[in-house]
Length: 101
Image 1: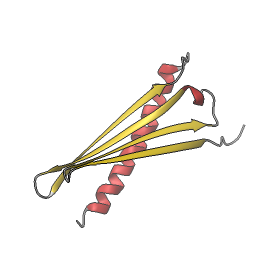
Image 2: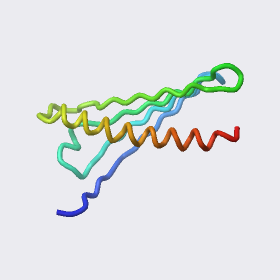
Image 3: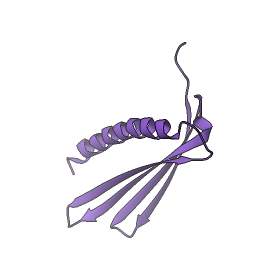
Image 4: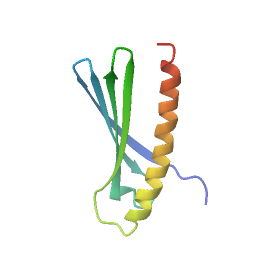
């Protein structure tokens, strides 16, 4: 009983399409808890220009299973809930930081 130390390998790939769109794809591989070797989390952010002064930000999440696991449904549900909250918190920080611009 105690704190679990979770290690995360976070890989980011960024692609810009002209001056109108930027796509950030992140893959998160985790270690340090049961069944961590069964899946990776993939997150995608797409920022697209809308008009002259606005952008549209779309965020997506996918839990990709690397091997079969009897807890897939539970892992997908919990991981999606935890990651969604973190991504929404990040979006709020980015939005606040961009307000002056």
